[in-house]
Image (tube, rainbow, N blue to C red; front, top):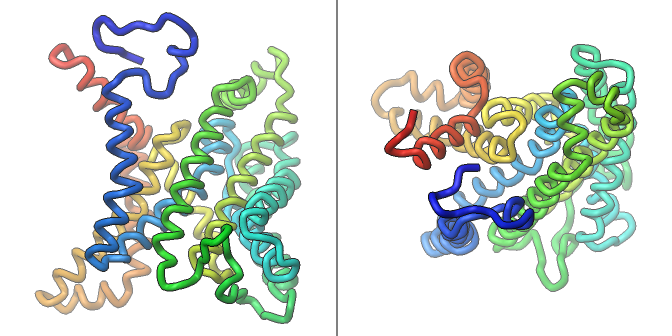
Length: 364
């Protein structure tokens, strides 16, 4: 990392600090104030709860993509079934509250553990296969888990059919009640806490021996094994941690909707999460955030543009009526454009911008 002239490190603690200069500290404080104070204040004071709901969707996408980033970006294990583990977490949390009366915070931990173990079961083939064959295995996890086990059996528990609705008063954290008229602001703060906690956990884990082993497996698994890395053990550990993150995501989704259905975890959502990290940048924590922001806000901006142009031509009305298809087509087009013109993602572009600023006026 480049530091300003005259700033240097005297020990390893300074060298490994997250925020190494006063400017970075100030910048992060400003970001914190915007997230924790400015956005909620603006949304509530102006009655624009839509922005809080949009922010919650961004946070949900970040949490969901974090596990995909770990597998694809840091361990080199391709996955196309991560929505299955999110579904396992969501249903574990819901059933634990509805059937056994377990408090919501405890169900988040339980959802993480169950989803992590379930992820390991489908990660076992990674010990023998890779590439295309691993893609097929993770796709099997999606269809076996969501389309068969959850839809045909788990969703039938309690005679509720496919749709689980959690009554008011079911989701609580101490005195805080979710599912009332002020639900968006409560979910927003819960989302911030979970995103920050999961980001700190994963970022620190990647700086340990475990994280270095994952990166070594990603870069060259044969060389890593020759150097003494137990690749089977570390691959399964990566699937477990990714599944845990997926379970936390599913448990959070329950608090956002106070309901859950297999339709929330379709195969398209697994593809969407892979697209998030491809656009944001693989192998980068920034990439998860940038990709989630891009993939959530761009469709909303596109919808606003079409809505604005509706009075000028009938074709825009037709596009608005079929916006779901427009959204999916835009998603495919964006993926192609990024693979052609920005293959390293938004995180790489952000790093280049920072380097330019740090080196100015001697930028190259």
